[in-house]
Image: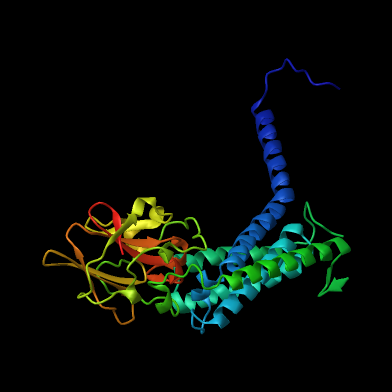
Length: 150
Length: 196
């Protein structure tokens, strides 16, 4: 039976259309949001990793318990930057995603604790808490769009 | 290959290996340039996050969003009577150099003298202890790292302006600066030329 298209659209039809649109938007978000979150977290880690590797001397102030002017602090920043870069690539590509996200969460947890201990609950600390939450979310995600599975 | 429950394919391992190798190359670059970019004025004194500032020129304003990262050539590589190098006030009169506006770090420089001091300037001075006061026909400037012994003051002629250089505000939080390697101080004469 075909629908009479000349009939006026009822309020129920409008709500059904809106419901359908909302469902489609929710479906789109469910499909793509984890992948977008993954890429954005990876880009964040990659940015910090790149800068820590290229200009480690500018980051030594963050190393806890080590003099910022020491070579040891530079080495620790370089190791940290290298880890961030590799984790970023793994997370963006989606290879070993849960493991990489878990490792990133551990690194971010260490950063949050260090910042909280040295500076208290500041804007920097809370910003990293948000990034930590994003990393934790990804530890439970296995199947996403645009992943390098092989 | 399975590692900790995760399956890694050949393409994934290859990609990670390339990323790791690129990271090593970048790390070698970073290690070789580790002595560049730290401000000769304030860098050597930066032994960890700066303590809350006590000088009146330093404020605890919240830092704005991170700005551009500094280049490997730090803003203090060319100028600035920095804190730890500040000679005594009896030193010879400073000679004018290039104009601050022509320097690459001009956009990262925030005036703290004379007033008014902007909110950005207060944020840029986070972690630093800077004192500027009138002294006879000029101004006496002391600049150091908050929580550390102040260096000797230096006298500048009347009309001098004092700027804090902060390449990246993102390393400041509250009244703590986690990275003093991109901080510094520049004093200019009335024509805007940097006083060496």
